[in-house]
Image 1 (spheres, rainbow, N blue to C red):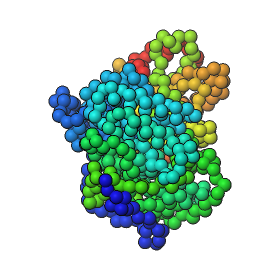
Image 2: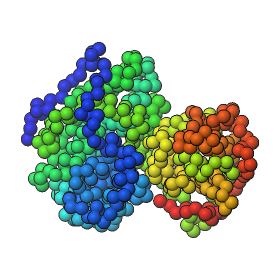
Image 3: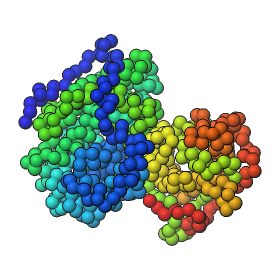
Image 4: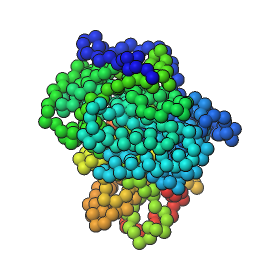
Amino acid sequence: MSDASAHKPHETRETPETREPHEPHEPHETRETPESRETPETRKAHETRETPEAREAPGPLCLVTGASGYIGGRLVPELLEAGFRVRCLARTPAKLRDHPWAGEVEIVQGDVTDAETLAPAFRDVDVAYYLVHALGAGRGFERTDRAGARTFAEQAREAGVGRIVYLGGLTPRGVPDSELSPHLRSRAEVGRILLESGVPTTVLRAAVIIGSGSASFEMLRYLTERLPVMVTPSWVRTRIQPIAVRDVLRYLVGSARMPPEVSRAFDIGGPDILTYLGMMRRYAAVAGLPRRLIFPVPVLTPRLSSHWVGLVTPVPRSIARPLAESLRYEVVCDEHDIADWVPDPPDAPLGFDRALALALQRVREARIITRWSSASVPGAPSDPLPTDPDWAGGSLYTDERELTVGASPQALWKVVEGIGGENGWYSFPLAWAVRGWLDRLVGGVGLRRGRRDALHLRAGDSLDFWRVEDIERGRLLRLRAEMRLPGLAWLEMYAERDGDGVTRYRQRALFHPHGLAGHAYWWSISPFHAVVFGGMARNIALTAEASEAEGTAGEVGVTSGGRAPGATGTGGMAAAAGPTGSAASGRRSPSPGRPRPDTGPHQGL
């Protein structure tokens, strides 16, 4: 085993020189990664490679859990590139169907806590990646993590799996588990359970992962960009050893080829040791921002810090709190033994400034292939749109709108698929903003999650406080609400051509109330539906017409807040007359049983 001195990270002192962003290094710019590979051309190439021969290609078979999440979604293409065959385990396989690599992998339905689904998933598997956790899922998340790890370990041993690879958290030296934050304590426990499974196991322990779309990066980015002057918790002075996401992926892939006699935990980190205060100042320098004025104070507890982070960044309080609690401890690597089994190339591990520059480049170019919000938010509703008889006797409130649109279905679909994020929601921006703030105040995700991609959506994407439940290209977008509600809610948008060749836009909001509070909620907001949902339908139609008239159907031409080009008023509210020749209707009624039959499919995903 190598000595820690073989890769001794350096502590970076803040000086005018170190605060300056480093110039991009050409080899990094041209290095092929999952992020740089995702282009329309390569996506098309991936989609056309789904053949029996490709699926039966030689190479060890890897089972990847958490493939819909931030790390898992990036690991899959790296494994394929390295010559492995990949099988993905997902509770909702449809969430993976639009990934560019979906045609090259096998996708099976299952859950790490369900032994019956794991047994077939482990069949013929050589290496199993455990990349799931219950972070922020409430007080019982440690119990859930423990049960999942034990079930996974038992089934892997019974199936004769050759290796388990787990990405955990770096824990501070000399601190007993009883004093760790629940998040770090649970990560450490999962690692021990897997190491004691009887299956050779690699546990990679990382601190802060820096990459476009990671929760740690988004928290750092928004805090630094939005607050030129800030009062911060005392943990901003704690030392941390961050690591670039591409190095994490390299170690994950390399771990699959370790010999059976290697079964242990490895610390992984980049070459820099910084305080969070230093990280914010370095971010400002790399991003070209003025130096931030930061005043640490001892009175901000992790609980108060999570509220502060939740208000300023897109990261909800349920995730911000465990992250903040973890930052109270010094997390620095004790060794770099991983290099004995996964040697570092000359340009790795990446330094902090370089990792930031690459992440910012991906953000600016809108080339973020996975985000921290790619995985479902713990505690958010996960039920698909109901269509089965089990809902008989229940209430389902609906608000339906239908408009004739003087544009092609293709132009209309471009607007529909571009909704949310910076493009807004096409009606009454203040109402949407207030709803987002209220959601964050009660611990919800709010509107700040935005979009993964400015123009294109795929099943499973987070979209502000919605999630894409289903998408039929050119026709249907169905969203499931993930804001805090006394019930379950969906929003459907259709772009269609009727029998007379006329383009029609149909919009349907559905709400299944939970108890009296749910019914009261619906009726309390019903008076605003004409403004919010009616204005939304009108402005979507207007935007499609204006885009096609200007020959820009391929772009979504809206301003912040979603106002249609040429519309007046706030969020297009003055466009009450709607597009020429349109017919609109708004129906809001409790209907017993399942939703009214529709021409489109409504099966749950």
